Length: 402
Image 1 (tube, one colour):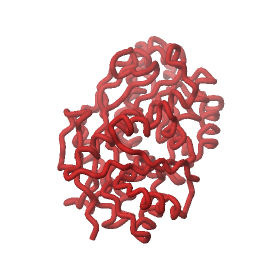
Image 2 (cartoon, one colour):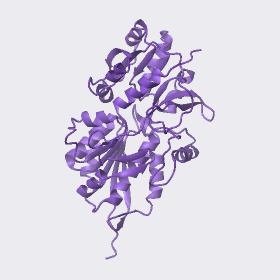
Image 3 (cartoon, helix red, strand yellow):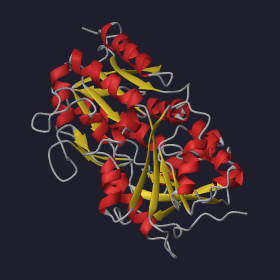
Image 4 (cartoon, helix red, strand yellow):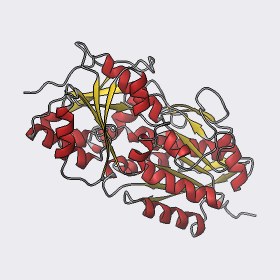
């Protein structure tokens, strides 16, 4: 009669090594914060259970992500999976969970990639896998509107280059990708096609950007590849007014690696210390959470920390609402989510934030790296047309070259 309730196991998969390790840089700190809240366990269907979070490194490799997901499901017998950080993690993990009937919550991959990249049917959706993030259409419209806000204006010619990987292929989709959105906004797109993800020579792309007089450049890069590309732009005399590489400049470390040539580059902002949201689990505001991270690590806040925390928050909230501790009950609780998280409201109940089943969109604003005060460079919010509740820091400006 005195036997302790069994432990609830949450699997967590994220890249902490490899080319996209910057996405997982703060994972252990976020896990530590969550574990403090879970110290006394959680109550599910009237019974208190200890919670174990089994963390696995995807090594930035989709095959590895799939392999560790299968191990967590089959060997470790997890109750619930969370995963994040680009399609290279989210898609293989979600596919394993869908196959095995394991409830799964993912984030930080454009929703069209999660949904259409897995051949989702908008009439039917998926049974076990749920996702929250923004989409390619949202980011394309945001970039276009931000670029068009430049004063004095550019010539509206955009050079577009995408990686030949999960993210780039999804972004290049003629129906769901980004170029069609740019064109609808009146921009001229010079499509440079797909390039190999680990390229170290961008001479042919830079030549085309110069020949076409593209005053705006946009491309998907991993941070190391962007550093190579941007250095070669300087060497070969390509100086666009606007450089916006989604994914490449999300992190302070990536900008610091560029030195002063990183100042003026722009990026999407999915979450920041100025976002007007607070955690339903801890009550912390975005600013308090970022301040705690900086105080503990002596490092600058980064965008993924909010989503990593929210991913675990939503998992815990779903478990607390489950009628029983079994897969179907946990899945039903996820489906019924209506939760205020650190990254904003999350629901899959059907409504304006659910473009297709299993997907909840989160707000997106435009950011630009500028010389900082506390840190070397600060990510300023410079365009909020799509989410006016998120405050602006400064105006959007053309890159200044020395």
